[in-house]
Every structure is written in C-alpha cells, then in structure tokens.
Length: 408
Length: 177
Image (tube, rainbow over all chains, first blue to last red; front, side):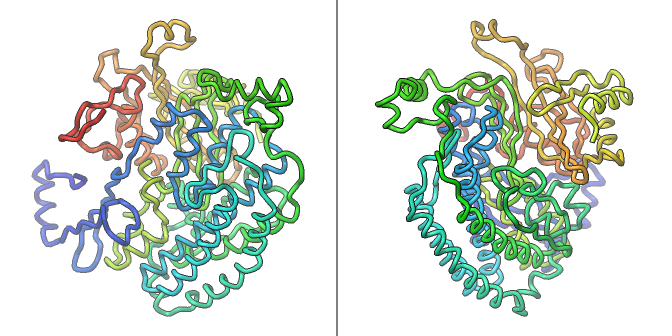
C-alpha cells in the first residue's frame, strides 16, 4: 500500500489535520486509465491535494526474459512494451543490438526503418490525441483518429502479416523486404492523411470546451522537464528542444528536411498541439524517404553472419549454408563482444533506450530498458496537484502512459 | 569539445582517488566512481558551466555473478554489482556513463544490501529509478526519500534480477513455477 502509515506523534497530528480529506482510489481498472495503473488521490472537495501513483500491476519481468531469449527472439517482447507503436520498439531494440555488434545496416534498411518509425509515430500520436479527446468529451475526434489508425494497421499487415505485434526487425535487417503494394498503400496514406489532419485541427484546436479543459492544466515548467528527464513531445511542449532525430541522428534522419516541433506553455493543450504538429512533420519524412528509397539488399551482407540468408543463397552457396546452419542451430548463433552499450531512439513517446551488456553469446547478459512512460508517470503528482478531479484524465491522457511499458 | 582523456584528467584532478577507474576504449566510455564520492561528482558534472550534464537518462543495476562454479572459474571477473548512470547534457549534446562497483552483499553477509548514496537530490528522475534498482537488483540507496519496492508487491521476497534468484514456489496461493 502506498499510503504510508503514521509512525510518530507529528505524523499523527498531521494525519488528524488532514482528516477531512477524501481518499479516492483511481484504477487499477478504470476506463480512463486506458491501461492498468493505480493512483491514490487525496481530495479536498473536488481539488486534488496529492496523488500517489502505485505501479507494478502489469509487471511481467521483461528484463528478466531478456536474459533468456536471444537478440532476435526478444523483439517479440519489445512489441508488447509500448503496444501502441510496436515498430518503434523493434527499431529501438535492434538499433541498440547493432550498436553493440558494431554493425552497419544497409541504406535501404535504414530508409525502410525510418519510414516505419515515422508511421508508428503517427499511429501513436493519433491514439494519444484521440484518447485525450475521448476523455474530455470529443468523441467524434476520437473516431477520426481511429479510422486513420485502422489504415495504418492495414499497411503494417500488408508489410509483415501482423497488425498489432509486428516483430518486423531482425539483427542486421528486417523480416523481409517490402513489396510495391506496401509502398503504394503508404503513398495513398501520405496523400489522404493531411485532409484528416486538417479536419482534426478544425474539430478541436478552437473548440471552447476542449481548450478550457486542457489549457493551463498540468503545467510542466522547462526546468522541471529537464531535471526530471522528460523527453519527447512532453519535454518539447515545455520548451526543451531536444530531439534525438536531430541531436544524434540515427538511421537516415540526417538526409531529410523536417522540423522539431516545440511549444513553451507546457500544459496539456501544448502537448496536444505538439503532437498534432509532429504528425505533419512525420508525413514529410515519410514522403521524402519513400521517394528516395534506395535499391539494393535490405539485410546486411552474408559475411556478417547475423541475418538469415535467403533460401536461394542457402541452397546454392557454401557461405549461405554455413551461415544458415550457424544461426539456426540452438547452441551456435553469432558472436557478440564483451561490451556494454546504451542505444536510444526518439520513440513517439520520448527517448526509448536499451542498455545492453553482451557476454559473448547471442543472449544478452542484461537487457535494461529505459521506458519513457516510467519517467513521465513519475511527473504525474507534480502536474495534478491543485487541479480538479476531472483534470486527472486530461493530464493522464496527455502524458500517454502505456502501462505495459511502464511496468515491463 | 574536450577529448575523453582531457576530461578524465580534469575530474581526476578535481576528485583525486574518488575516481577509481575508467575505460575510454569501450563503445560507450565510462568512468568509475567510488560510492562515497558519487553525489559530489554528480553535482560537479551537473553544475560546471561547460559540462552541464543536466539530464539523467537511466540508472541500471547489473549483477555479475555466475552460479555454476565450472563456468565461474573461466571468467575474468569476480562476482560484483554495478550501478550504471547514463547522463546527457542538453546544451553540449554529450553523453557520459558513470559506474559504481559494489560487492554483491555488504561485508559479504548475504541479505545485507550494498549501499550507494542516492542522487535523487541532484536529478529528480533518480527517485523512481533508484526504487526500481532497489526492487529488482537489491541495492540500498542511502538518503533516498522513500525507498520502497516499486514494481514487485511490497511483501515480495528476493531481488528478481540477481543471477542467483529463484522464483518462489507460491505467492499468496498463486503457483510460481
């Protein structure tokens, strides 16, 4: 129980002075938490005096599983962390693994991963903003957002066969190359989506009810955002200009023309606006990457011995046969240096990092994850203090807390 | 931007024997700090105008331990715990890794957790991260405002990310394995 019992006389006196406060249990099962998390709220009438987050309801030992599954198998677990944008997690995981191996992926793979990372950013922002709209009463807006998410799911399904848990990347490449049909579907999406975005802008940006419920609610100052390591749209809405895509360009981001979207207000409305603006920037990146998608192989060279060779190579070349055998046999796999790395990407929600310790085998010695939700949820009591009970859902929605990633 | 060696010389000058080691050849170069000097070093790194490591990305605990004595004999390290701090600087866009190396148990008495001073006064992110390391790896952060388990239930026994951890047979009537 997070409510600490009174131990000393002073504590007791304090407890009596606060006796008139209500204690309200919010969650773990509540439609507005969207996932499984619990907050104990101390209320003075309708005002929130304090909020005590209690997490761990969805703790499933992902980091422990990482010490048992090999680098390719673990990608299925990363899908289940932030299941709103699984492809971004896949890319973050294998980005860190490739940094550990010192592996340079092919240009085509870089571009492809960039496209997918940006599409999953759009998908994540659509859900987050849609849910904020839903929680504050804008149901129509939610449906607009979810219709487009459905289109994105169709693209992912055509790409890799799975709509929800994609597990698309592999060490040194991806599951398999794209088809012209996928590219055509993405092109259609890029063409049609701005119209929906305009509609969504018109629905909420000047909607009196929505603006009243979100403006000046849950204000995060720039100093607080930096000191508590907020990243992603939440930090950028508070005026922190950090974006890993610009600061430490990974994949192919240095090739594209896009802007980092920032605001200075730091409230729920600013976070909403930053996410809306980021979707437009993501579309720009997707369009540029799509039109300049390099030809050539999508997996690393066969000599690297990390990506499974194609069937044709296995049957017709000796290197292919050896490589296939080494990767498929249970006690073989590829060698990994005795090193440790921290690899991070700018995931839709913020900086998603993996700290990997390699021990020579193809199973990580330690697979630590730095989930953005964990850091952002710690901010929640600070943001909600002094606001009303109905603001809890607005703040919670704008932080985009995904409990599977929070608890791992 | 100063080179790794220049930076290392500078903090060695400043803190002397509190900087107990470094590896500049690693993929992510790291500096090892003695536990008693940690808070001081962190404050220095955060506040120096040309360093400004004002963001703590992540605190991770790693347990180095091999339960199998045959395999342990072949290893080039002794059993120990590491607490790893990943820092970034927003103004200079540089990242840095600090390490604190600890015995697995304080004074080699099993059950007595090793201690590190808490840096939650330097970066507020450290609050939850230290609770997580305490919960899963078993490191006591002295001076932490509220050191409780965070992911596991309050009455959980053991530290799941230690290499010699075994799942309990049952927990409140739920089968464990």
